[in-house]
Length: 558
Image (cartoon, rainbow, N blue to C red; front, side):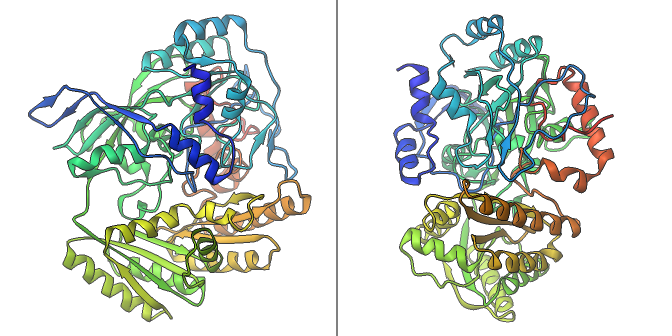
């Protein structure tokens, strides 16, 4: 089967849940286990297995990045490349890719590259985002090794052609847009588990490995990787956007769970950022510098991850509340009690209604908290009873809990597919997903004030929160061709971001900056911080080919 044809089947740009699911189920991703070791022995026989079908992404991130027009002078300042109207279109000027570069890429990648329009279009349009760009990639390459990535990046740097690293295509902030064309580096063929160290509780993987497939692989060893940003996300993209997920309240974000990286810099050099030691005070922390850089400093080719033991026992609990403020207050009180919850998720009544419609359920359509407690059976049940008491003190009702594995799995599945549940209410609309995060003590006020604005809007708006760490999302459904809708969705987003920033919060807790959040960084971080970031960028990428225009606002000068 031709490479272009195969990937055209894999990458479907349709938003439809059922079409997307059927397509994904036809092509499963494969992990290759090339080495599994303990401290005393190694097993060399490779193990191949097929992962389960990927579900559509709800709230996740990818390795994809935005490429803007390369600048010969990295200190040059431009006006913003993002359309000031509420059209969500990123402007750009197309520069033809030299034939010499095409020939060099062909020599490096052989058949693992394409100029096919459909393939380039699919890589240039986010599958789960309303963000758009005026251009698409000129070339898509599919490297199989770190050596190939190094050669590709070096050739692009030599010809001053922008590159766009591309992972699971699950970004919702326009990370995979290519408004000025260039070369898209699809990392999906670099999907091996290179080494598993069971006794050290770490694993070395390539960036194209998906977190869901990785956890299937790890399960027989009693281990798992605790970040769960959403179905379809890959490890490389999760590093690039510094993602987290519902388990971050217990296990931290991506920056806390990566031990070390290997990264290809703009000139093709390969840098190893750290050893496998669990802690080190040796030199600058290059690992944390790259995590969250969204492809602007280098292309990640290898990741060493910290693993956790699969919990011995878990309980999932749900409780209803009259208002979202009551629910948020309980989440805060639970964290202050010292209970080590692994998940605290808040859903408002509109989101619960969407879940009922999409899944044929009859859950009470009121603000709801979902908890997960882990540990021994006795400890988990003890935690559950303490939280039940806290909830009862804040107008909580209908407190129920589940211990059956299938019931627990079904409950979290509904939460993970929240975005697609919303589309059941307005199948032909797009969704803007906000991502603000504030200090935990401010969460109840932020959600309460935001909820007033959302409820007063003519648009359908739902609220979902990782309530244990102050991060909440509003899912706002709108018609992208309706000017009033576009203006309203921008107004609501601005309100929530500026409210969060006024509380010493952030415009993005886990989705990354992409094209959607870049306009808020100066207010959040200050110009001096942005200048410092741009100096780092200029030092590592003097030709400005690594996702230029992304993460750092284009008007920043130094």
